[in-house]
Structure formats: structure tokens, C-alpha cells
Image (cartoon, rainbow, N blue to C red):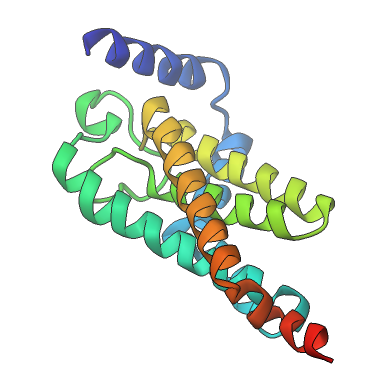
Length: 189
């Protein structure tokens, strides 16, 4: 396990030593706060609920993010109890308000990748690409701001993607995605 921690800190130190500057501090702070409590993704999902064409996508996003919250924030973080990087290496202070709670996995990343995968699977290609770019920026901002290790980010990507895939599968198998989109009504006519 020590070699994983060593690699984690090597990556974090590289980011701190090569990328940190006043302009990037502001940019990465914005992306980190955009992902706070899944805010940007929840807002996007709620907006999608108002349109028949995107309603199912919004519901599946919310379900995938809720599952990620349950598994990641409620279960894994409290079982693994990994302290955040800035608590281990106290010589680096986060550029954002220091978050409470444990580090593994990254909740911001879990939420971002759950939402991005659902958008990419169900919407036009451009929206999927934009969602993934935003998800990557939010995930990177968590390392830049020294509040997550790279392995926390990797775990968040995996967990978020698995939650999205599971919800996409469930909604497709049960026919809920068609019912929510109104496709079943069209097929009956």
C-alpha cells in the first residue's frame, strides 16, 4: 500500500510544483465548487425533467448519482476512512474551503462521471463530450486543490461509471426509460 500512497503524493506534488498559479487557482476553485454536492449535475437533471425528450435522462442521472452517494459517501468513505491529502501533508493548504469527511472515493468525481456517462449514453454526441470534459475538469480540480488523491479520483470514476451503467440497464430492462420519454405512447398508436 505504501507504493500507492507514494505514487499518489508524487502526482499531487507534480501538480503543485508545475501547475499552481493564481489564475489556475481561481479556475480550479470554480470547477471544484461547481461539483459541490453534485450541484451542476442536479440542476442539469432537473432541467431535463421538464422536456419529454430528456426526461428519462434526467431521472436516470438522478438515480445514478443517488446510488453513487449511497455507496461512496455513506458506505465506502466510512469503511475506508482515508484522511485527505492536506491533513497528511500539512505543508500544502487547499485553495478551497477545506472539506470535512474522508477522502476515498471522491464524491465530486463519482457524481460527475455517473451524470456524464448517462448523458453520453442517452443524448447527442456533443452533449456527451461536453459532460465528460466538465466531469474531467471537476475531477482534476479536486487533485489540484489538494483535497483528493489520484486513487480517490480513479475510484470515483469507476464507481460513478458503474452506478450509471447499472441504472441505464435497470431503466432499459424495466421499460421505465421508454415510459418516461413517452415512447410507449407513440408505439401504442
